[in-house]
Length: 224
Length: 237
Image (cartoon, rainbow over all chains, first blue to last red; front, side, top):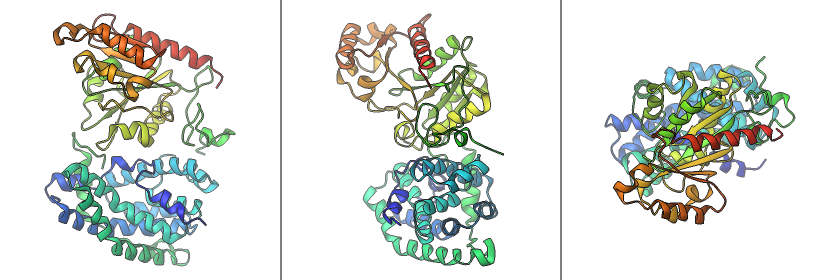
Protein backbone atom coordinates (compact mmCIF):
# COMPACT_ATOMS: atom_id res chain seq x y z
CA UNK A 1 0.00 0.00 0.00
CA UNK A 2 0.95 3.65 -0.41
CA UNK A 3 -0.04 5.65 2.64
CA UNK A 4 0.54 8.82 0.61
CA UNK A 5 -2.68 8.04 -1.29
CA UNK A 6 -4.48 9.15 1.87
CA UNK A 7 -3.06 12.65 1.42
CA UNK A 8 -4.42 12.77 -2.14
CA UNK A 9 -7.83 11.49 -1.06
CA UNK A 10 -8.19 13.78 1.98
CA UNK A 11 -6.90 16.91 0.23
CA UNK A 12 -9.59 19.60 0.18
CA UNK A 13 -8.67 20.22 -3.46
CA UNK A 14 -9.50 16.66 -4.50
CA UNK A 15 -12.05 17.42 -7.25
CA UNK A 16 -15.11 15.67 -5.88
CA UNK A 17 -17.57 18.54 -5.50
CA UNK A 18 -17.09 19.21 -1.78
CA UNK A 19 -16.25 22.88 -2.26
CA UNK A 20 -19.91 23.73 -2.87
CA UNK A 21 -21.07 22.27 0.48
CA UNK A 22 -20.77 23.62 4.03
CA UNK A 23 -21.81 20.56 6.05
CA UNK A 24 -24.59 22.53 7.73
CA UNK A 25 -22.32 25.44 8.66
CA UNK A 26 -24.10 27.96 6.43
CA UNK A 27 -27.48 27.32 8.02
CA UNK A 28 -25.96 27.43 11.54
CA UNK A 29 -24.30 30.75 10.67
CA UNK A 30 -27.48 32.16 9.10
CA UNK A 31 -29.44 31.22 12.24
CA UNK A 32 -26.84 32.94 14.43
CA UNK A 33 -25.76 29.77 16.22
CA UNK A 34 -22.21 29.96 14.87
CA UNK A 35 -20.78 33.49 15.10
CA UNK A 36 -17.07 33.12 15.86
CA UNK A 37 -14.17 30.69 16.05
CA UNK A 38 -15.22 29.30 19.44
CA UNK A 39 -18.70 28.52 18.09
CA UNK A 40 -17.19 26.94 14.99
CA UNK A 41 -15.03 24.66 17.14
CA UNK A 42 -18.07 23.40 19.08
CA UNK A 43 -20.10 22.99 15.88
CA UNK A 44 -17.30 20.89 14.38
CA UNK A 45 -16.86 18.86 17.55
CA UNK A 46 -20.55 18.00 17.51
CA UNK A 47 -20.55 17.16 13.83
CA UNK A 48 -17.40 15.05 14.10
CA UNK A 49 -18.80 12.88 16.91
CA UNK A 50 -22.19 12.36 15.23
CA UNK A 51 -22.38 12.41 11.44
CA UNK A 52 -18.57 12.28 11.22
CA UNK A 53 -18.46 9.09 13.30
CA UNK A 54 -21.25 7.48 11.27
CA UNK A 55 -19.51 8.34 7.99
CA UNK A 56 -16.19 7.05 9.33
CA UNK A 57 -17.77 3.73 10.33
CA UNK A 58 -19.40 3.24 6.94
CA UNK A 59 -16.21 4.24 5.12
CA UNK A 60 -14.08 1.89 7.18
CA UNK A 61 -16.53 -0.96 6.60
CA UNK A 62 -16.52 -0.33 2.84
CA UNK A 63 -12.73 -0.37 2.90
CA UNK A 64 -12.78 -3.85 4.44
CA UNK A 65 -14.52 -5.13 1.31
CA UNK A 66 -17.95 -5.53 2.91
CA UNK A 67 -20.89 -5.37 0.46
CA UNK A 68 -21.22 -1.67 -0.52
CA UNK A 69 -24.92 -2.06 -1.35
CA UNK A 70 -25.69 -3.26 2.18
CA UNK A 71 -23.64 -0.35 3.50
CA UNK A 72 -25.53 2.01 1.21
CA UNK A 73 -28.79 0.85 2.79
CA UNK A 74 -27.23 1.21 6.24
CA UNK A 75 -26.28 4.80 5.34
CA UNK A 76 -29.90 5.50 4.36
CA UNK A 77 -31.05 4.14 7.71
CA UNK A 78 -28.57 6.40 9.50
CA UNK A 79 -29.48 9.53 7.52
CA UNK A 80 -32.88 10.70 8.67
CA UNK A 81 -33.23 13.91 6.65
CA UNK A 82 -34.17 13.48 2.97
CA UNK A 83 -32.12 16.59 2.11
CA UNK A 84 -29.02 15.01 3.63
CA UNK A 85 -29.64 11.74 1.80
CA UNK A 86 -29.83 13.63 -1.48
CA UNK A 87 -26.67 15.60 -0.67
CA UNK A 88 -24.79 12.46 0.37
CA UNK A 89 -25.74 10.59 -2.80
CA UNK A 90 -24.91 13.57 -4.99
CA UNK A 91 -21.49 13.92 -3.37
CA UNK A 92 -21.04 10.16 -3.58
CA UNK A 93 -21.72 10.25 -7.30
CA UNK A 94 -19.25 13.09 -7.79
CA UNK A 95 -16.62 11.33 -5.69
CA UNK A 96 -17.17 8.16 -7.70
CA UNK A 97 -16.43 10.06 -10.90
CA UNK A 98 -13.18 11.46 -9.48
CA UNK A 99 -12.21 8.12 -7.91
CA UNK A 100 -12.76 6.09 -11.10
CA UNK A 101 -10.48 8.47 -12.98
CA UNK A 102 -7.88 8.54 -10.19
CA UNK A 103 -7.79 4.93 -8.97
CA UNK A 104 -9.65 2.87 -11.60
CA UNK A 105 -10.88 -0.50 -10.37
CA UNK A 106 -13.70 -2.95 -11.03
CA UNK A 107 -15.36 -2.45 -7.63
CA UNK A 108 -15.86 1.28 -8.31
CA UNK A 109 -17.17 0.52 -11.82
CA UNK A 110 -19.63 -2.01 -10.39
CA UNK A 111 -20.93 0.47 -7.83
CA UNK A 112 -21.38 3.13 -10.53
CA UNK A 113 -23.32 0.62 -12.64
CA UNK A 114 -25.65 -0.49 -9.82
CA UNK A 115 -26.13 3.00 -8.34
CA UNK A 116 -26.17 5.37 -11.35
CA UNK A 117 -27.86 8.05 -9.23
CA UNK A 118 -25.04 7.85 -6.72
CA UNK A 119 -24.22 5.81 -3.62
CA UNK A 120 -23.71 7.49 -0.24
CA UNK A 121 -20.52 9.54 -0.04
CA UNK A 122 -19.11 7.63 2.96
CA UNK A 123 -19.52 4.27 1.21
CA UNK A 124 -17.87 5.55 -1.97
CA UNK A 125 -15.08 7.06 0.13
CA UNK A 126 -14.38 3.71 1.78
CA UNK A 127 -14.44 1.84 -1.51
CA UNK A 128 -12.15 4.47 -3.03
CA UNK A 129 -9.70 4.06 -0.15
CA UNK A 130 -9.77 0.31 -0.78
CA UNK A 131 -9.10 0.88 -4.48
CA UNK A 132 -6.20 3.17 -3.57
CA UNK A 133 -4.69 0.41 -1.45
CA UNK A 134 -5.46 2.09 1.88
CA UNK A 135 -6.58 0.48 5.15
CA UNK A 136 -10.03 0.74 6.78
CA UNK A 137 -8.62 3.05 9.45
CA UNK A 138 -7.31 5.34 6.69
CA UNK A 139 -10.80 5.51 5.19
CA UNK A 140 -12.16 6.35 8.64
CA UNK A 141 -9.63 9.16 8.98
CA UNK A 142 -10.56 10.60 5.58
CA UNK A 143 -14.29 10.52 6.41
CA UNK A 144 -13.83 12.00 9.89
CA UNK A 145 -11.60 14.78 8.60
CA UNK A 146 -13.90 15.54 5.67
CA UNK A 147 -16.83 15.93 8.05
CA UNK A 148 -15.24 19.04 9.58
CA UNK A 149 -12.83 20.40 6.98
CA UNK A 150 -15.72 21.44 4.72
CA UNK A 151 -17.56 23.41 7.43
CA UNK A 152 -14.33 25.18 8.42
CA UNK A 153 -13.58 26.23 4.83
CA UNK A 154 -17.17 27.45 4.44
CA UNK A 155 -17.06 29.41 7.71
CA UNK A 156 -13.94 31.26 6.55
CA UNK A 157 -15.94 32.56 3.59
CA UNK A 158 -19.24 33.14 5.36
CA UNK A 159 -17.96 34.77 8.57
CA UNK A 160 -14.74 36.27 7.20
CA UNK A 161 -12.89 34.41 9.96
CA UNK A 162 -9.13 34.75 10.25
CA UNK A 163 -8.03 31.71 8.21
CA UNK A 164 -5.25 30.94 10.71
CA UNK A 165 -7.74 30.77 13.57
CA UNK A 166 -10.07 28.62 11.50
CA UNK A 167 -7.33 26.15 10.58
CA UNK A 168 -6.35 25.99 14.24
CA UNK A 169 -9.87 24.65 14.89
CA UNK A 170 -8.99 21.58 12.80
CA UNK A 171 -5.66 21.16 14.60
CA UNK A 172 -7.38 21.54 17.96
CA UNK A 173 -9.71 18.66 17.08
CA UNK A 174 -6.90 16.33 15.97
CA UNK A 175 -7.20 14.13 19.07
CA UNK A 176 -10.95 13.88 18.53
CA UNK A 177 -10.37 12.84 14.91
CA UNK A 178 -7.94 10.15 16.13
CA UNK A 179 -10.55 8.89 18.57
CA UNK A 180 -13.38 8.85 16.04
CA UNK A 181 -11.28 7.11 13.39
CA UNK A 182 -10.15 4.44 15.87
CA UNK A 183 -13.71 3.88 17.11
CA UNK A 184 -14.98 3.58 13.54
CA UNK A 185 -12.23 1.21 12.42
CA UNK A 186 -12.80 -0.97 15.49
CA UNK A 187 -16.53 -1.19 14.73
CA UNK A 188 -15.81 -2.01 11.08
CA UNK A 189 -13.83 -5.09 12.17
CA UNK A 190 -17.09 -6.62 13.37
CA UNK A 191 -19.22 -5.87 10.33
CA UNK A 192 -18.44 -9.20 8.60
CA UNK A 193 -19.65 -11.21 11.60
CA UNK A 194 -22.31 -8.94 13.09
CA UNK A 195 -23.60 -7.08 10.03
CA UNK A 196 -24.21 -3.34 9.69
CA UNK A 197 -25.65 -3.15 13.22
CA UNK A 198 -22.04 -3.20 14.41
CA UNK A 199 -21.48 0.24 12.88
CA UNK A 200 -21.98 3.57 14.71
CA UNK A 201 -25.47 5.08 14.38
CA UNK A 202 -25.14 8.44 16.13
CA UNK A 203 -27.32 11.30 14.97
CA UNK A 204 -27.49 15.09 15.22
CA UNK A 205 -31.18 16.04 15.00
CA UNK A 206 -30.45 19.76 14.66
CA UNK A 207 -28.27 19.11 11.61
CA UNK A 208 -31.13 17.06 10.14
CA UNK A 209 -33.69 19.81 10.73
CA UNK A 210 -31.52 22.67 9.52
CA UNK A 211 -30.51 20.73 6.40
CA UNK A 212 -34.18 20.67 5.39
CA UNK A 213 -34.50 24.42 6.04
CA UNK A 214 -31.36 25.15 4.06
CA UNK A 215 -32.54 23.12 1.08
CA UNK A 216 -35.57 25.40 0.66
CA UNK A 217 -33.72 28.74 0.88
CA UNK A 218 -33.95 30.73 -2.35
CA UNK A 219 -30.59 32.45 -1.71
CA UNK A 220 -27.57 30.62 -0.32
CA UNK A 221 -23.89 30.30 -1.10
CA UNK A 222 -23.53 26.59 -0.41
CA UNK A 223 -25.63 23.72 -1.72
CA UNK A 224 -25.85 22.15 1.77
CA UNK B 1 -29.18 -3.54 -15.89
CA UNK B 2 -27.86 -0.01 -15.62
CA UNK B 3 -24.87 -0.24 -17.92
CA UNK B 4 -23.17 3.08 -18.58
CA UNK B 5 -22.00 3.70 -22.09
CA UNK B 6 -18.44 3.84 -20.78
CA UNK B 7 -18.74 0.25 -19.61
CA UNK B 8 -19.10 -0.87 -23.17
CA UNK B 9 -16.50 1.42 -24.67
CA UNK B 10 -12.84 0.49 -24.78
CA UNK B 11 -11.71 3.83 -23.35
CA UNK B 12 -14.25 4.24 -20.60
CA UNK B 13 -11.80 5.95 -18.24
CA UNK B 14 -10.23 8.48 -20.56
CA UNK B 15 -10.98 12.17 -20.65
CA UNK B 16 -11.43 12.04 -24.39
CA UNK B 17 -13.96 13.97 -26.42
CA UNK B 18 -16.69 11.42 -25.88
CA UNK B 19 -16.45 11.00 -22.14
CA UNK B 20 -15.31 12.92 -19.12
CA UNK B 21 -13.96 11.72 -15.82
CA UNK B 22 -14.68 8.09 -16.53
CA UNK B 23 -18.45 8.40 -16.31
CA UNK B 24 -19.33 8.45 -19.98
CA UNK B 25 -23.03 8.09 -20.56
CA UNK B 26 -23.35 10.92 -23.10
CA UNK B 27 -25.76 10.10 -25.89
CA UNK B 28 -24.25 10.69 -29.28
CA UNK B 29 -25.63 12.82 -32.06
CA UNK B 30 -26.25 11.30 -35.49
CA UNK B 31 -22.78 12.53 -36.51
CA UNK B 32 -21.28 10.22 -33.89
CA UNK B 33 -20.23 12.79 -31.32
CA UNK B 34 -21.85 14.05 -28.15
CA UNK B 35 -23.08 17.66 -27.89
CA UNK B 36 -20.64 20.53 -28.31
CA UNK B 37 -20.09 22.10 -24.87
CA UNK B 38 -19.47 25.84 -24.85
CA UNK B 39 -18.59 27.81 -21.69
CA UNK B 40 -19.49 31.48 -21.21
CA UNK B 41 -17.47 33.39 -18.61
CA UNK B 42 -16.76 36.99 -17.73
CA UNK B 43 -17.13 39.68 -15.08
CA UNK B 44 -20.36 40.36 -13.19
CA UNK B 45 -22.86 42.32 -15.27
CA UNK B 46 -21.07 42.04 -18.61
CA UNK B 47 -24.04 40.34 -20.26
CA UNK B 48 -23.39 36.59 -20.00
CA UNK B 49 -27.01 35.71 -19.28
CA UNK B 50 -28.24 38.11 -21.97
CA UNK B 51 -25.86 36.43 -24.42
CA UNK B 52 -27.14 32.97 -23.47
CA UNK B 53 -30.75 34.14 -23.81
CA UNK B 54 -30.10 35.70 -27.23
CA UNK B 55 -28.23 32.60 -28.43
CA UNK B 56 -31.10 30.36 -27.38
CA UNK B 57 -33.68 32.54 -29.15
CA UNK B 58 -31.60 32.60 -32.32
CA UNK B 59 -30.51 28.98 -32.46
CA UNK B 60 -33.36 27.02 -30.86
CA UNK B 61 -35.24 26.68 -34.15
CA UNK B 62 -32.32 24.94 -35.87
CA UNK B 63 -30.43 23.24 -33.02
CA UNK B 64 -31.22 21.16 -29.94
CA UNK B 65 -29.84 23.27 -27.05
CA UNK B 66 -29.61 23.01 -23.25
CA UNK B 67 -28.16 25.41 -20.67
CA UNK B 68 -26.36 24.98 -17.34
CA UNK B 69 -26.17 28.12 -15.17
CA UNK B 70 -23.76 28.64 -12.26
CA UNK B 71 -25.39 31.16 -9.96
CA UNK B 72 -23.26 32.35 -7.08
CA UNK B 73 -25.88 33.10 -4.49
CA UNK B 74 -29.35 32.63 -5.93
CA UNK B 75 -31.05 30.92 -8.86
CA UNK B 76 -31.67 34.24 -10.59
CA UNK B 77 -29.82 33.49 -13.83
CA UNK B 78 -31.70 30.23 -14.30
CA UNK B 79 -34.96 31.90 -13.34
CA UNK B 80 -34.34 34.77 -15.76
CA UNK B 81 -33.92 32.28 -18.59
CA UNK B 82 -37.06 30.45 -17.49
CA UNK B 83 -39.06 33.67 -17.19
CA UNK B 84 -37.94 34.80 -20.61
CA UNK B 85 -38.93 31.34 -21.88
CA UNK B 86 -35.86 31.12 -24.08
CA UNK B 87 -36.00 27.33 -23.69
CA UNK B 88 -38.41 24.85 -22.08
CA UNK B 89 -37.75 24.48 -18.34
CA UNK B 90 -36.42 20.93 -18.64
CA UNK B 91 -33.56 22.25 -20.79
CA UNK B 92 -32.16 24.55 -18.07
CA UNK B 93 -30.26 23.35 -14.97
CA UNK B 94 -28.76 25.46 -12.18
CA UNK B 95 -25.57 24.43 -10.36
CA UNK B 96 -24.48 25.88 -7.02
CA UNK B 97 -20.89 26.86 -6.56
CA UNK B 98 -20.19 27.53 -2.86
CA UNK B 99 -18.93 31.10 -3.20
CA UNK B 100 -16.32 30.17 -5.82
CA UNK B 101 -17.60 30.31 -9.40
CA UNK B 102 -14.15 29.74 -10.89
CA UNK B 103 -13.68 26.58 -8.81
CA UNK B 104 -16.83 25.04 -10.27
CA UNK B 105 -15.80 25.66 -13.88
CA UNK B 106 -12.06 25.00 -13.61
CA UNK B 107 -10.67 23.31 -10.47
CA UNK B 108 -13.50 20.99 -9.47
CA UNK B 109 -15.91 20.51 -12.36
CA UNK B 110 -17.84 17.61 -10.76
CA UNK B 111 -21.19 19.35 -10.30
CA UNK B 112 -21.14 20.94 -13.76
CA UNK B 113 -20.21 17.69 -15.51
CA UNK B 114 -22.99 15.97 -13.64
CA UNK B 115 -25.48 18.64 -14.73
CA UNK B 116 -24.35 18.39 -18.36
CA UNK B 117 -24.60 14.61 -18.40
CA UNK B 118 -27.97 14.60 -16.64
CA UNK B 119 -29.34 16.94 -19.32
CA UNK B 120 -28.01 14.69 -22.08
CA UNK B 121 -29.40 11.59 -20.41
CA UNK B 122 -32.80 13.17 -19.85
CA UNK B 123 -33.18 14.92 -23.21
CA UNK B 124 -31.36 12.53 -25.53
CA UNK B 125 -28.82 13.66 -28.13
CA UNK B 126 -28.26 17.44 -28.09
CA UNK B 127 -26.34 19.70 -30.48
CA UNK B 128 -25.04 22.35 -28.08
CA UNK B 129 -24.86 22.73 -24.30
CA UNK B 130 -24.11 26.24 -23.04
CA UNK B 131 -22.43 26.36 -19.60
CA UNK B 132 -22.73 29.85 -18.12
CA UNK B 133 -20.29 30.71 -15.33
CA UNK B 134 -21.23 32.89 -12.39
CA UNK B 135 -19.81 36.40 -12.73
CA UNK B 136 -16.14 36.29 -11.84
CA UNK B 137 -12.81 38.05 -12.37
CA UNK B 138 -10.55 38.31 -15.40
CA UNK B 139 -8.63 35.12 -14.55
CA UNK B 140 -11.65 32.79 -14.75
CA UNK B 141 -11.36 30.14 -17.43
CA UNK B 142 -13.14 26.85 -18.09
CA UNK B 143 -11.46 23.46 -17.71
CA UNK B 144 -10.96 21.50 -20.92
CA UNK B 145 -12.54 18.61 -19.01
CA UNK B 146 -15.82 20.54 -18.92
CA UNK B 147 -16.13 22.46 -22.21
CA UNK B 148 -14.87 22.18 -25.79
CA UNK B 149 -14.74 25.95 -26.35
CA UNK B 150 -15.16 29.05 -24.23
CA UNK B 151 -16.54 32.53 -24.82
CA UNK B 152 -15.42 35.41 -22.60
CA UNK B 153 -17.89 38.29 -22.31
CA UNK B 154 -16.76 41.76 -21.22
CA UNK B 155 -18.51 45.08 -21.77
CA UNK B 156 -17.45 48.59 -22.68
CA UNK B 157 -18.88 50.05 -19.46
CA UNK B 158 -16.56 47.87 -17.37
CA UNK B 159 -13.64 49.97 -18.59
CA UNK B 160 -12.10 50.21 -22.05
CA UNK B 161 -8.69 49.20 -20.62
CA UNK B 162 -9.78 45.58 -19.92
CA UNK B 163 -8.54 44.21 -23.28
CA UNK B 164 -5.19 45.95 -22.70
CA UNK B 165 -4.90 44.47 -19.17
CA UNK B 166 -5.40 40.99 -20.59
CA UNK B 167 -5.63 38.02 -18.22
CA UNK B 168 -6.46 34.41 -19.12
CA UNK B 169 -10.11 35.11 -19.99
CA UNK B 170 -9.27 37.90 -22.44
CA UNK B 171 -6.16 36.33 -23.94
CA UNK B 172 -7.05 32.62 -24.18
CA UNK B 173 -10.82 32.43 -24.74
CA UNK B 174 -11.87 31.01 -28.10
CA UNK B 175 -14.16 34.00 -28.68
CA UNK B 176 -13.98 37.39 -26.93
CA UNK B 177 -17.27 39.29 -26.93
CA UNK B 178 -16.99 43.01 -26.15
CA UNK B 179 -20.61 43.75 -25.31
CA UNK B 180 -22.77 46.88 -24.93
CA UNK B 181 -21.03 48.84 -27.68
CA UNK B 182 -24.15 51.06 -27.76
CA UNK B 183 -23.05 52.46 -24.39
CA UNK B 184 -19.60 53.51 -25.62
CA UNK B 185 -20.41 57.21 -26.19
CA UNK B 186 -22.08 57.45 -22.77
CA UNK B 187 -19.19 55.98 -20.78
CA UNK B 188 -16.37 57.44 -22.84
CA UNK B 189 -15.14 54.06 -24.09
CA UNK B 190 -12.81 54.00 -27.08
CA UNK B 191 -14.02 51.07 -29.22
CA UNK B 192 -11.14 51.28 -31.67
CA UNK B 193 -8.62 51.07 -28.85
CA UNK B 194 -10.48 48.10 -27.35
CA UNK B 195 -10.43 46.28 -30.68
CA UNK B 196 -6.75 47.09 -31.20
CA UNK B 197 -5.78 45.98 -27.68
CA UNK B 198 -7.80 42.77 -28.05
CA UNK B 199 -6.04 42.00 -31.32
CA UNK B 200 -2.65 42.58 -29.67
CA UNK B 201 -3.52 40.29 -26.75
CA UNK B 202 -5.24 37.56 -28.76
CA UNK B 203 -3.41 37.30 -32.05
CA UNK B 204 -5.53 35.24 -34.43
CA UNK B 205 -8.27 34.42 -31.92
CA UNK B 206 -11.55 36.12 -32.88
CA UNK B 207 -13.09 39.14 -31.13
CA UNK B 208 -16.61 40.48 -31.64
CA UNK B 209 -17.72 44.00 -30.72
CA UNK B 210 -21.49 44.04 -30.41
CA UNK B 211 -24.54 44.78 -28.28
CA UNK B 212 -26.24 41.41 -27.82
CA UNK B 213 -29.58 42.92 -26.78
CA UNK B 214 -29.91 45.04 -29.93
CA UNK B 215 -31.51 43.73 -33.12
CA UNK B 216 -29.08 41.40 -34.86
CA UNK B 217 -26.51 41.95 -32.09
CA UNK B 218 -26.18 38.23 -31.39
CA UNK B 219 -25.71 37.30 -35.07
CA UNK B 220 -21.87 37.18 -35.04
CA UNK B 221 -21.82 35.11 -31.83
CA UNK B 222 -24.46 32.69 -33.15
CA UNK B 223 -22.48 32.43 -36.39
CA UNK B 224 -19.35 31.53 -34.45
CA UNK B 225 -21.27 28.78 -32.58
CA UNK B 226 -22.51 27.36 -35.89
CA UNK B 227 -18.93 27.28 -37.22
CA UNK B 228 -17.66 25.54 -34.08
CA UNK B 229 -20.46 22.99 -34.27
CA UNK B 230 -19.73 22.26 -37.93
CA UNK B 231 -16.05 21.72 -37.11
CA UNK B 232 -16.95 19.61 -34.08
CA UNK B 233 -19.31 17.41 -36.09
CA UNK B 234 -16.82 16.98 -38.95
CA UNK B 235 -13.97 16.02 -36.63
CA UNK B 236 -13.65 12.24 -36.13
CA UNK B 237 -15.02 11.20 -32.72
